[in-house]
Length: 441
Image 1 (cartoon, rainbow, N blue to C red):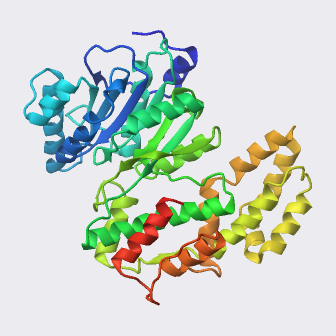
Image 2 (cartoon, helix red, strand yellow; image 1 turned 90 degrees about the vertical axis):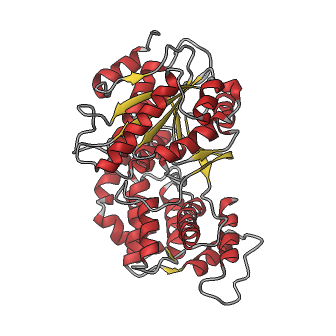
Image 3 (cartoon, rainbow, N blue to C red; image 1 turned 30 degrees about the vertical axis):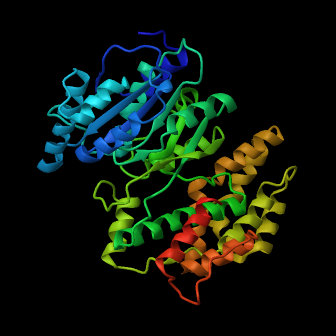
């Protein structure tokens, strides 16, 4: 066991989880830990492993995979059985007795991996918190006990999901970018499989357009929270992890709140030179997110080809230009400017107690840098989303997806907009074109 920095010891004593042990062969020199929650993912896990052993082997010695196989006591028998299959499969590889050709490939590849059993009797996750957030936290906290803090290079905690696959250069690009540019936190590009022409592909194209449109709108508006919040794409160094008091235990949106916490303390970059490929399936695993949106699309319970009115991002852009203006220390400047931008903006700020909060921020900020930090923390990612929803519900309702895209592309002076032939919902190949533009924006 390596010497652990005092800051890490303090974190583990105060916030760390140690009720679940990691099973792994004796390893040394680990700089990078990839945490992979898995619940009922026996078949998908094999696809993930296949993509991982195709990474650059130069990084295998310094990298450890941690699979957090998890369920609660109330999970169904099918889930529990699947998890036990996963545990047996992984343990057989670790003990040198793989049960199939892929297992032998994994064994021969010399990748380092460990297993945390949060699925067997007396080891299950508690009902109250049992879910993806807690599973990630268990693995990410365990990483702090595995990392070799005496070795050179950044010490990274990466998270992805068992139903994902990875580009062959995922490890190489992430590790090299963090080390060469001294990054603190980042999200990796992601792409769902949009190659087919079936209803599931329709659903995933629609959903990925929704995700990317919102982030592009935030970029246009100059938001410091203009990044994707997808758990399978998150990376941070260990210093940033303990600085924000670690991962949360949320059953859903754990990625949104973790990245928001990071963004209030460090800069979050986007690594576009490689990609994670999340599953585009429907799912019961979380109450909202990709799986639930796919389920909703397939059930046809509401119109899905709708997006936030792009005028919302225009209002947000004007507000950011005012709110983040340097050297402004009078509350009347912010209030009068908000009234001029849009009547609903000043109402929203009133509902959010902006005036007393901003007076307090101005009073207690001793420097311009401190003031800007406090502004960013006040108008955070969650409040930004609340504002867009408030405008949606108060005069700027959602509009046709492709009308919204055309308008936003126009705001950004993009050189090419797909030809829709006056169709509200264009053919699937045109929808792919819209998605590809967003992927490169």
